[in-house]
Image 1: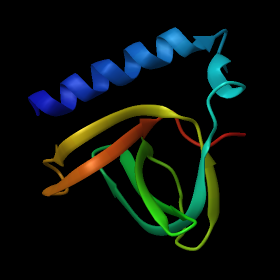
Image 2 (image 1 turned 90 degrees about the vertical axis):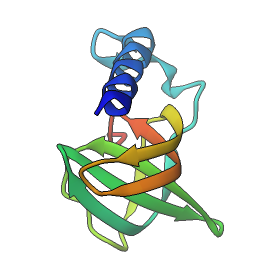
Image 3 (image 1 turned 45 degrees about the vertical axis):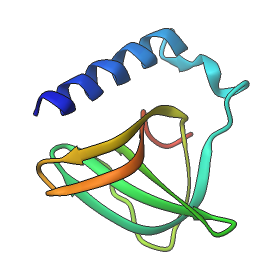
Length: 104
């Protein structure tokens, strides 16, 4: 739980720096995380999405949303965590990005 709270605080701090009047300020400089959904699951208010692009898989956590396997998504860049363990999923991620969600 402590690691989750630290990740959440880091995520909120990151978003407060790069958000201006509710509009993502870094979208021009930082590219979106894009790919095809190959795996997804909901837990603890988050949707965990594994995106694949050019053979590379990237795990991203976003606020809970409806996501379907096979769809293509573009997500805002976010804070990367290494060796993140989700207690609710009982799973450890070598690397995961906490994102504000889909690019609209």
